[in-house]
Amino acid sequence: MKKLFWIVPVVLFLGACGLGRSDSENASDTADSTKDNGAGPRGKAIVVYYSLTENTKAVAEEIQKQTDSDILRIETVEPYPEVYDDVLTIVQSQREADELPEIVKQEVDLSEYDSIFLGTPIWFGEPALPVEKWLSENELAGKTIYPFFTSGSSSIDESMGRYREILTQATLGEGLGITSSDKSQTASLVEEWLAQ
Ligand SMILES: Cc1cc2nc3c(=O)[nH]c(=O)nc-3n(C[C@H](O)[C@H](O)[C@H](O)COP(=O)(O)O)c2cc1C
Image 1 (cartoon, rainbow, N blue to C red):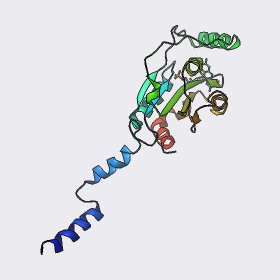
Image 2 (image 1 turned 180 degrees about the horizontal axis):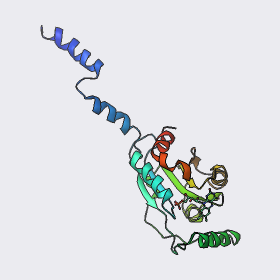
Image 3 (image 1 turned 60 degrees about the vertical axis):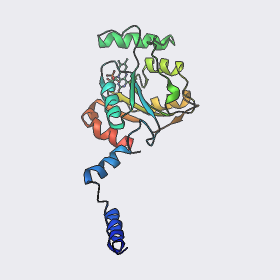
């Protein structure tokens, strides 16, 4: 019985100091709270993105790395040409004809996910056509969508406006835009955005 006089205060003291766990373990608790693939702050999450010249891919992979989410790349059945000016011509004519490119069917059960980080390059101010196509083929009611964009210099305002128009059944989070001039700060911009 005598022993209890010192055991109890020592245990309480250690508990209050957070001892018995190293600083690094305590720090990793903080990092884990940003992870999404489980019971994270956004529930179970997936990064879904389209990228023609890999800029959006780099941002998608950074988000995936920082959140430990699943990841899915949207791909067109017919690849766009290699030459940039030819892409502009084709995309412009698809837009004029209200035509969306066919995309490759992929087996993913979106009902498993609560949140989607949705990435696209900005094409003529708006989300790229393969992303529009993906949105037209998938049921996103009840999900939270966190949009991210890359562009030469355009702001995300017009693209966010487009999402507000079409994603009426989903909750839209704040968007992240990375232009070619802030590409080198991708990791920190993603980190700040995820802390929203
Ligand atoms: C068809 C097309 C249209 C584009 N339109 C715009 C635009 O309106 N504003 C802009 O800043 N950049 C525009 N860009 C540049 C891309 O948004 C930018 O290079 C983006 O980072 C490419 O992403 P990706 O490498 O993932 O394909 C356009 C590029 C293409 C191919």
